[in-house]
Length: 78
Image (cartoon, rainbow, N blue to C red; front, side, top):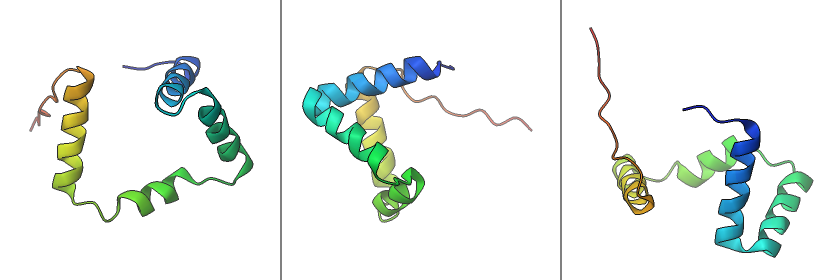
């Protein structure tokens, strides 16, 4: 599934407002724009110490909580 940049931004902003509230969502966006934020570096610092099994379990739990489709097994063709 591919979504447009506009739709992605709309969804992201809705998530931020839902979780942080309007004021803190705006503060977050301002901080991201003001600081030289490297998402890849932040992600590595944030997740490098998380065991794969724990990360996977959290992702599956989040997916179920959101009411999304269950994770599908990848098919490997030889």
